[in-house]
Length: 424
Image (tube, rainbow, N blue to C red; front, side):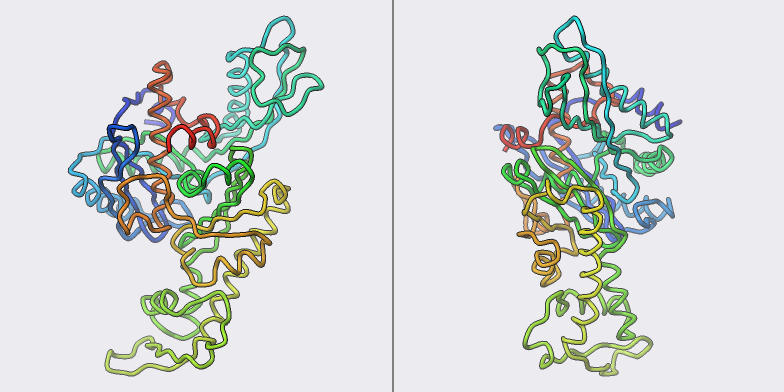
């Protein structure tokens, strides 16, 4: 069954229990939340499993990835005492494309209504999909009517020509179809695909950050994603194929130590910034192939920092250059939120502030109740955002039951800022 027939015939049923599934290079996370009596989301289950069978966002071993997904879902279901039927699935920016289109329509003779806006949106989606892509998000940025520019909501207005600047995020249907197949092997359905960059922003940003302009950097194991929010909209996404696992590999190669010990060295002693004590602090490093009784070699923390820092510098320099090339460095503002597992590296935020010339903070899930220590971790940000997106989707279906067709749900539901005001 093709992806499109799957989406055409699958109907969503509004639920009070919502699940998000984030499949990353190093781990698979599943979170389950339930709406409480006040309509707020409360986490009731969380599970994670080491990820196998995924590389740069693409499935390379279906059996291995299915086993990882089953493990994460089972742990979350056991904690929540729930049996899931469907999940909102995060899509890595590594397998998505961003499109910016300018669409216009003749509107002479009548006031602009929702039908006109739907026609423009449909035309934008058609242009992207006829090139062989599948639209995940469709985001109207601004409208122009004749010589009037930057209109937020043109409904009820008159003119001759309506123009819309529309941003879209898409992926290849075959890639998404493989993820559908993986989830179906776990006896679940895909309630919707969501850009994990958008999900991370939804979970970690506050209203003013979304409105005034903020860059969200999600530092994963295999990739680092960028999302720029401004004027309560997602303006830009991109991905750097460098992540925390590359730092670990640099350490392993530099000191001839096993990967498991390199990861430990990074977590306990690694830093992206130099300190005055680095050359005095000694660290014992186990060597590849040596038995447990061997003392290993000794290095200074300064030697470790000199391996870690260049890779983190490279990451932020690539982000800076990509944003400048895309022309979004100005609307991104001065605010920076860094999240994801690799964001917890000591000194990462300080180095990002220097290179990107911004004011950064660590991004953790902010808007869900009942989060225990494990699920307040930056590693859980994307998963928490998927759950929030799911609530947004079901809220829309409650208000507009005619949108129950699955093909409607992955458009961008209004502005992020207004959603935060109404739901948090």
